[in-house]
Image: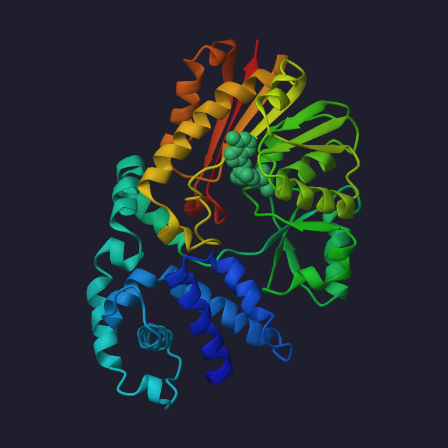
Length: 403
Ligand SMILES: C[S@@+](CC[C@H](N)C(=O)[O-])C[C@H]1O[C@@H](n2cnc3c(N)ncnc32)[C@H](O)[C@@H]1O
């Protein structure tokens, strides 16, 4: 591979913005890719993948390159030089890469690879927390899985197609997929591609949704005709799946505290042909109270640390802070206590997170069961999905029944 100057400069600009201005990697990359219309798909994937790689390995690369935050441009070039050496990419003879100590880089990499927090490139506090919660063996395996590039998985929208038919249509548009055993609606891309440009996507035949995430709506045990409330619906990944499982029959009320996310949900629902979805922004407690004791199924896809989805969102390693985790655990419990009241007698509640930490998952459910609101519920089943075991995102889900 030969490095091209304008692609490398765009990558360095993106990294400076992510590391030094605290911007979100996905947003910065999206903006950077719009900078030059002449860039082809290989150029675009170089920028996106190199930026994500260096974000993912920030601690390790900074340690090897002997640079500290806030990073100057020359520091970022040194980190990129580390990336080149460790990936066997030829270092260009540009002034920015003069005197790159290739042997020293390899030596330091071998030395640091013996220490997990450097090898897996994560903050001390997160390493300690993961080990405390999951134990040394599982955490070590999980970290390694969470540091690998996530596969692209899509969900065939059964309101409009079947996975088989979708695979054929995508293939006609030059995109090859494999179907996933045990995930009835999922297809995995054989190679990364810009699938949002396909007609198949524009026509609403699929959504991008990780395989583990597709387990959540399945876990809800919905039937066509039910009344379902998705309380933390965001832009509607799970809502749209629920609409498909309910064959567009019955009612789904999608709630969130952010109206702009619900607007996006509406746009997606229209594309997907999901007609049984209504959105309501939670702008006061009244919105929730009005729904008390009314739903056959309630989903709480709770805000969480996102520690199960680090492979697709590696900058969360650097943006997450311990005090945020404390706050989010309180929010999770409050939400459980409040929103569980929406379930009617005999109805079911599903609590889910994309975290692998028991303190956000099974321990929260156990705490909830001991509260006043929780005493009417019994735990039916729960599932912890580790990325190291499934090959997809880390997730947790619990189904509870109200008596
Ligand atoms: C894990 S995300 C939801 C993802 C979404 N369900 C999906 O499948 O695409 C959690 C969501 O909870 C929302 N949220 C945060 N605090 C909330 C609260 N107190 N009540 C309701 N929603 C909340 C966030 O805005 C965010 O959209």
